Length: 336
Image 1 (cartoon, rainbow, N blue to C red):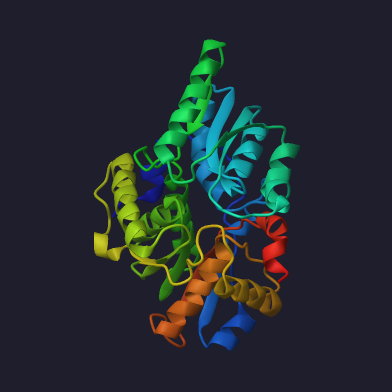
Image 2: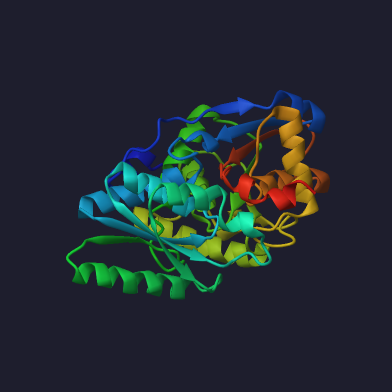
């Protein structure tokens, strides 16, 4: 079996997190649901309200520092946790940030465009770009490449954190490391539950766990695409990750589990199932979930339990990926 530490040692890492993040048992929720529920608290990674993107950014920023970059360029939705955390990481290493925001979520109120991650990014003194299409990853990457070329012409060194699936998934290396960390903390559990959006967290964690000898089913709860589309994306991404690590992928395609029963009404939109899950977690454990990723993930856990894919008494591990600043930009959806 490959040693994860050896596999990832070739990638430069910018230290952004005090590791490991805690794993804690949710006693009251376990009693309520009739399962043995644990949570990996990657909402506690620090750096501008934390979240899972910090693990990914340790490797992107590491590569940028090695390149002696002056500026980080990245694309995300208006309320992207990734762009907010990237701006904070860049500031920590003395770099500027250019954040390209996409319109992915229709019919949002004014708070969506001014609070939450947008407010934090503005406090970090970033340059904003806007891209009108929310489902054109190659177009968004091309727009960043054009802006980067302008910086080069003025003697700057830019570093692009790409959006598209065709690029090497460097950020996933952070969750290969995270999977090995989780395996040390919890060497046995029956089912794992993670959000699945870009796929970098889901794919890296699955790879890290399998390389560490944990073969429990890991369900990726779809937050952006339906289960078939997401599984196809995950298949491509994890193959590319294996190539990046220079190994054979440590699982087959059928081991990639995606579930979309709480995706509706769509990416970045709060449905009744996710609102119920968010309130249930808050009122039972005092833990806040975000409206875009983790509330749908916990709602997915409830759905899998209802369908019998999670059985009574099983030990279940849920990854909390953070994203909490978005709560404040979704006030109109959460107070109804």
